[in-house]
Length: 227
Image (cartoon, rainbow, N blue to C red; front, top):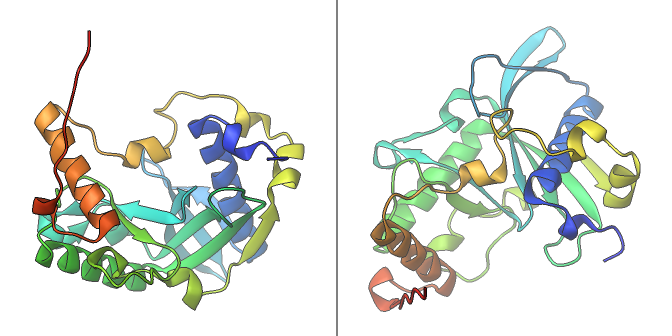
């Protein structure tokens, strides 16, 4: 592809997406300041018209975004603490040309994630506290458990659409330079961290089941380790 976005490292691409998210909020009239003491969470104060809200920035390169459930889906890490969710997404997965920025009311995002969790639990999928659960930005037409909660980007118009070529041409040195992972929450920080091979296999089966639209019990995976 001409703009080279897919050839960027994961952290570099994430930083471009975050900059686009911040630009989208700024272009919507908000003044942003980082919420201190949030560790790896990418959480920001949004100030506009004398009112302050708290927003979580999420990024996606495959048109799905995640929040980790807590207490069996009764609570959601980061999502429960914010008023707005800002999502920066590529316009298409395979050959992205633009980054689209959306601002969603956190209350509606919570409702959709709760519905998604309930549908997947009913379908027999393995859902674990602290592991990111993914919901599609656009309507998933497959009619399976993973389709529930999708479609936020079809309900809300983007607050900003930014050509990737322009973003890369701007040469954000502070964005494209690799930084310590402790500075920010990248997409990798939303991926589950495993301690055993069994945990990896259980998670992989759940993901395959969700994509294929079948129960977890129908998925059989073989693992081969060569030395």
